Length: 115
Image (cartoon, rainbow, N blue to C red; front, side):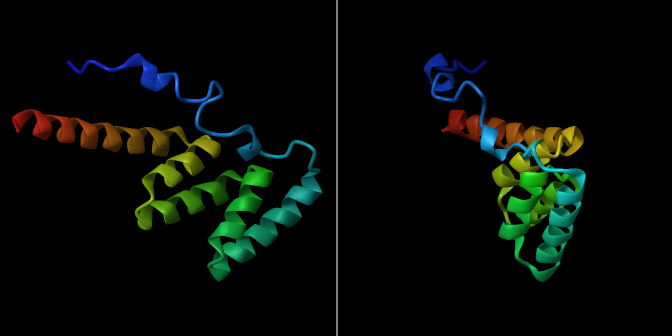
């Protein structure tokens, strides 16, 4: 069993690791969201993933956030991918990624104990 220093947890913000500004803008109309999502899809298809991500985060477009998350995974950025999956409320992908992270940490700790 691993002894975890509880002071580590106190360093995380109360609201969690996803900032409130990352949540969708509730003031946008359905028409505005649709236009922005179209623009985000265009940017994504052109390879401008950063602009697409900002648009999808603003509108809360789940499918777009998941596609950005998949790009992050392919690019070796699992923490950024996890954030996109969480914002998209994709529990299946989020949980799978968290399980992989837990296994990796467990493996590192086991190897450390051997030395």
